[in-house]
Amino acid sequence: MKYFIRGEMPEVFNAEEQSHLQDVKQLIRYGFIALLTTLLILLYCNEWKKTAKWGTAALFAILAASAVIPFDSLFTKFHQIFFPQGNWIFAPDSTLITFYPQNFFLTYALSIAVYSVFLALLFLHFVSRRG
Image (cartoon, rainbow, N blue to C red; front, side):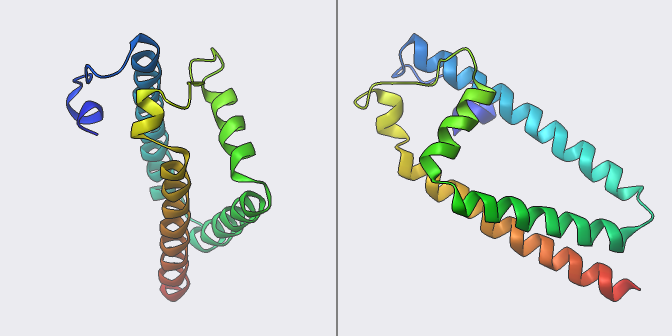
């Protein structure tokens, strides 16, 4: 995690793993920019109730689809979309896979889903009380 904050690449990774981690770092930056942009757009939205209802419905639809599709398929498709150059496939005994096994990503994805649902319901609750 220190790499993503301070920019120091751990020396334990080979060149292919370092290339992938650099791409991941860039993807996280783009995701953060997209999140900030979305939040700024929402701040200027006048129809909070409608936005909250449609956003929550969209979130539940995405989560329902994600629950039906096997995680391996989602993981592979995600990497094919965001890392089309193919630098995301590593040997099972590689340092990167050893540090970050697939179970790490499954747990991380589930955490994101739980926090997203909690925040969406909280937002929906406060918007509906607002009147």
